[in-house]
Length: 630
Ligand code: BF8
Ligand code: SF4
Image 1 (cartoon, rainbow, N blue to C red):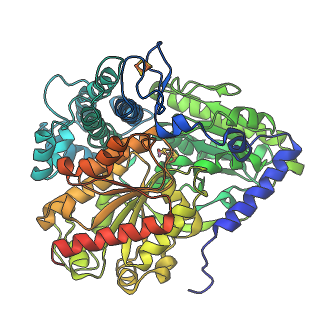
Image 2 (tube, rainbow, N blue to C red):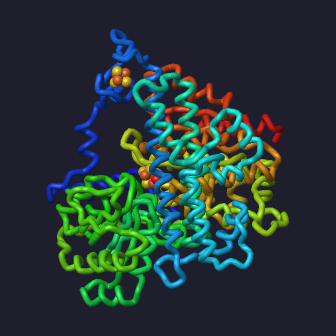
């Protein structure tokens, strides 16, 4: 293994401790302190048994008060809360997808946004039955953007993208009445169902939770991913680095945070211009370093190799280095804490979206129409701020790992084709991957996704589970903050192959891949859905028969619940390390962990003991192998 060594969570924590020391000097707050003030959490909230959807309440269920004022029982309340939580997530992902479709509509050969992957655009257009012959690529982009935007409010029928799922899956969805219709309709219908005096039947509410999830995964998120590829290029393997050590004390440091690549791509583009680099030098810096936090970081890492400063619970750390000139955010997963925190340092905190406005920030409204101009203003603001840095507060933990990222479905198929000698058709097939799985060289695959959550020692669950799985010849596809945990630890360094079982190690060597494949941001979990759909079609199996499961061991957001619902509804058993506020109702818990299996051939497992969670996943994968006789 040479000098290669994983970075441990203890080392991450020591680095954070050192940064919190700086924080204390300037009176900064931190999530570590706020957690202490907020715990123990409210038991009613934790169990999902508090209802405040009408003004007769709030009603809390206890043995003495088994029903709310309207008579709703605990199962109705828990299931309603679960559906609302899901709808929040599907709305959020899907609105991100809508913004991307809007950016596609604004493409112009001479404008800020161009079509970088015309082949992919043509491929999707053909899939949707749109005539492409002889059409100008920008006319096609605008036509497709309008059609994609139409998916949000389509009057009849289901999401176009569900045609990518195997016939069997589509039939299940239709039979169970969970095939996703218009995206906005599923979200609205969810909020209608949870209104006072509508649904209180757990089965109906959980069914709609699956449907609302599906309009995200096979609707809004898939649009976000696919059209981001059209706009900014389909990712292919690229080298990058991860952890706070990617920030550079000699340079102007700009951190991009949030989710929408329309902003981060443009910031990277402008910061890379000779004009801005010269300006930074004029101001005393050696250059400009862009790094990222959360999913927008994944977006620009996958396409440009921009380094990842960290994941969700590391967002305050980038400011605590004292070397962050500017942190620019768009939407989602942004701590409002960044406002007051940035005021303790010289850091500029720039919000850009009307959807995510926060106190103590500079608001520079960003849109495809003013992208170049505003990106320039933001980069210039960062450079001008370099001279305000307080050298005595600067400390960047010298901690980073190399990572190879950029594994879109297209890239995975291409890369794994080098393992077996199957012929690939025009767009490749998943057959080499299937051969590795059926021969037992690989036992299966796990999709590791989701956030950090202080309820789990941050990053430990992601990293420990991945180590355990790869040692058992199970390949990992990862996204979101889970992928960043892997990259920070070193699990996306190709040298991590030495931590694998013999089979996976051979695959890594032959295909020249790391054992944990970075598939992108959270909307890119739709890539994972496309991958399993193709695996099922190419193998002649149903998705639920594949030795593949999903896992979100440290999840925290509404989006994660929406994702969980579409992953399960697609036929993949999903393993959670944090309880989704349903423990108050045995009926709802039973439905999610078992009952829904009758509808969609998969269900949830909730297990807070991370080691046991890993064992259960391995067990399930082996069970699935036995069931299909491999
Ligand atoms: O969408 S994994 S903390 S950054 S919600 Fe957020 Fe969770 Fe990170 Fe991306 Ni996903
Ligand atoms: Fe209480 Fe029913 Fe109103 Fe909920 S809907 S707050 S349970 S009265």
